[in-house]
Image 1 (cartoon, rainbow, N blue to C red):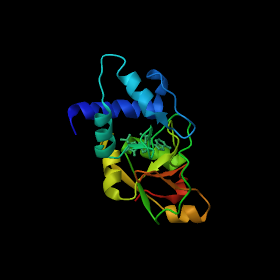
Image 2: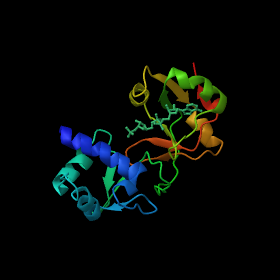
Image 3: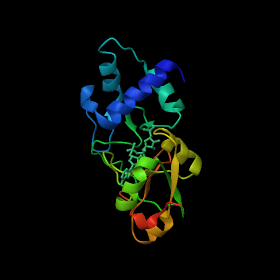
Image 4: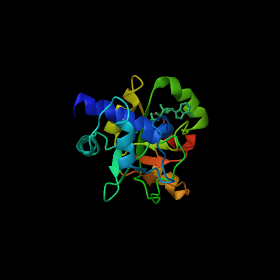
Length: 180
Ligand code: HQG
């Protein structure tokens, strides 16, 4: 992916997950926004973005962070929102274990409170350790927690899987976390 498209991806994450108003766009209740208006607003100032470039970003973004609807008239971020939207995905049985990458300075607090969603709409969990290592590495030396998601599901905690494969849930109480 080109440097320009990488920067545009970051900007799109910012507006589509957190601050649509900064670009003067609105998201519907499921997080979708009009592609035509998005392009119009982006091209309003001294930035230029074509539909072809946007299509390239959606197709090649390393984490498939964005998705078009069927006829490509709307676009949304597949997960990671802090604005209140409903992704409209059905709850789903998770694997027996999922993983969470974090760093040492959060461990004591996680031991006390479990995993909490903070400013995002969900706690984000990974299907494999590899991905969790990458998530944790954003903040320093990664520590990988194993979550007994199968057991949580049996106890009626709801899990969702975003279009790009991230496991989402509302909270993970300490008793389901293996700290090792
Ligand atoms: C920590 C990126 C103290 C948690 C990634 C994490 C992911 C607690 C931080 C996605 C805590 C929240 C989400 C507690 C949780 N006490 N700290 N009780 N419970 N934490 O960014 O999971 O590149 O909101 O361990 O790849 O790091 O943006 O969540 O360190 O998929 O697409 O609080 O964001 O994806 O941080 O990352 P975040 P996350 P994108």
